Length: 395
Image (cartoon, rainbow, N blue to C red; front, top):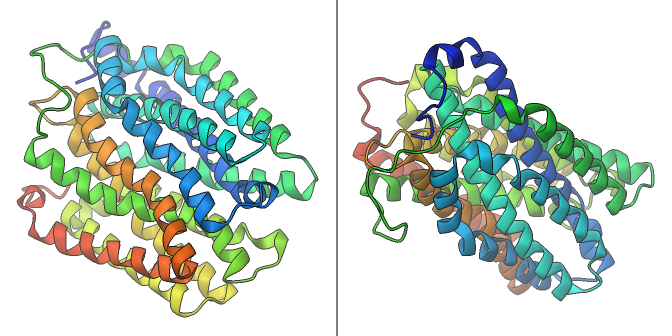
């Protein structure tokens, strides 16, 4: 695990609450950076006069960047430790975010989003490895609450986007504000991260065939995160073009999704302890399906807002559960295991939005959401067939 510690376990245990706050804030900063980009997509799309298909192609640069660095991210975290990586990559992530408004055409935006995917992937692997290490200090499940901090950041990012738009602040001013927040957090909280590196028991190629359990976790994560990606990047466009909400309320669908996802993550550990991971993930898949399909059948403002809330609850516990299980794998260092599972999962998060754009171009955005609703059903049936979730303990 990442927690091959340079300090005694007693010292870390005494500081465990401060460590948890610091790790939560790093999750928050990554979330607010991505949410700020997502909240501005409709404006950037209109400014560059992009069609749904063009936007879908450009959004494909995010997974390209992620795939290009998935092996490197795992190796860096394993070699240097997630704490060392997190002292650098969040600031790089925010700096790339601030370069987005300077794009003057589709190709420039695509190039910047490629770098956004690279830096975002490194943030994702390192911060989740910190989450696993912190969870081991507490000796109980707390990963869901870390992802809750990320979700609150998503809601906050949507709210900040709404406020900056209504107060007439441009995209660059909005993103510079996020950069200041990220730099401040890194300077204050980097010293409270869990130190240490993963043990180097054996040399293992990242591109070796993943263990069956890790591959299964990655596929389930793919279904869930593809749905998240659809909500992040297209909910504003959906409310603008399909629901035909007023300009000032196009963020409502995104915000309703985020607030319920955050709420679900803060109560998720208790739900998992009561129902077990298997049943929790199955019910989550059903909620994802019902919510997205309802928004397709009844594209009305109030109904879609409520439907997006159901989707938010549905995706809340999935990724934290999957990452926690991956990080506890005894045969693979946590940084590498998380890179494997996260790369497959995050591929859904990043490739989902471009796919929606292509389907929308060929048919309509409603058809796109209808197809993605089926991911929830696939997840329901897949989890039901996996022996991985036949736990002796629901926690």
